[in-house]
Length: 307
Image (cartoon, rainbow, N blue to C red; front, side):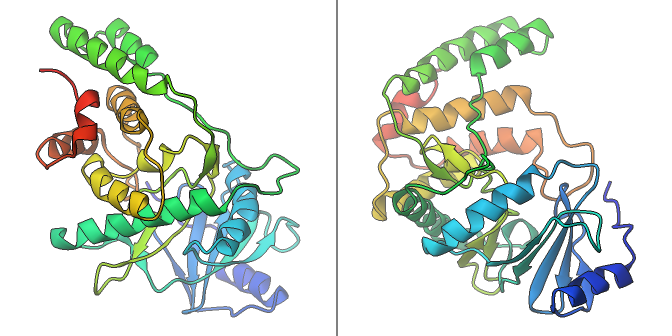
């Protein structure tokens, strides 16, 4: 359930005035984030107030990541202010420029526009990986890579009685098939690590890609990481754009994407709130089925499950 920000508007306005920023009108973005209360400030800025019950890690990660990705030419709104003084508001507060784009997850985009949108997102990922080779992070604020252990997830599902014997045997074979994707060594790259539909901004009229937002999970990770949080059926389009921009798809790239997908399918628990950004387990299953109904290039074949 979305909890309205308890901070009186006049205190938020006082904070903005302290920093010489426009004061309003303030428009809360309902359900946009579980970490922050988010406000549109007129037509120029976005203000994010870290909730006091939530760790501030994401805000500090963004403080490091956003200037770096902006300098690399990645389309993302500029971070205009980072304030952890708690002088006016007892919280970590960030202010961003306001993008003309709207969250993909909030718009009824025509299916015919999705291929080009995800190809553009794939190009952004390739640019990100190629242009950012080092970031000054003396405090270790960038996120660390977390790899799902699909073997352990299957074992938990088995122990909890959430899977029948025939499906268990089939999934166990597929998981071992996918584990081969980790055999080849690979260098870590800089990744956004959360490119879901509410962190992808598009032009509401044309459906064209505009920008990515929310870099609170960014860090050095496997090159396939930024393909894990988009719908599986969109990955083939995203890979097209990624490779056109010079991204390299190694032999196990697709296998590692599917490895993460299987672990998610077996372990995901729906978010208890009604936040629109929170994906549902049924959506993950539907995305897998949808993937199997579209043309795939031959590189997918070694990683798709046997009947």
